[in-house]
Image (cartoon, rainbow, N blue to C red; front, side, top):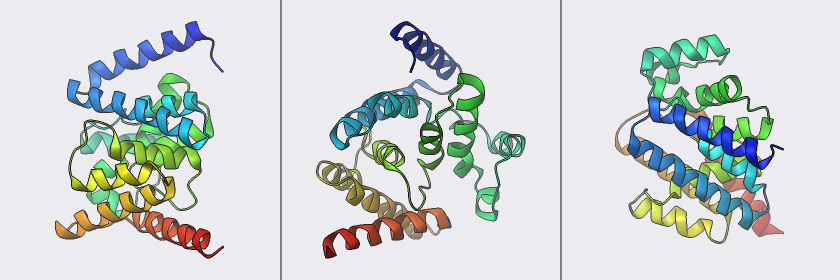
Length: 201
């Protein structure tokens, strides 16, 4: 764990990097995700410090152009499937995790996994990944009825919020006739089966 002085210095360096690579509106979102992840961590028994780091680092590659995302994925050894190759934006979470490790020395595997999973999700996500996945959905700048449903669920049941977030994503993609990535389907089915298992006990 970093000392308070090192933590402040590290956070300043991340914010300076973000100021050069993402627009102010996205920084507002990132800070909202950071704060929301910390709140959810406190509520559900995860490390607030880890959650905050994951939140601050989760969108490092958000505004990379498609060509750069594909090049960075190749350089970082990230497998790229056919859907991601057609829609490189889907790679920004995995690339952000790689950059968090490379540029800012993030070595915690749970933090890196949370960053990598925050967009598409995955089956068997650990608690920190669930927290960041939901925090990205419900941070204060996000609006809309779908966001409100996920936000309400997150007050009482994190897994229910994960399920609703995945389902809302799938519905939006279907309505706009875009491909649904298999990891999002896995996330939805895993969350659903987990909730059903809990309810049957």
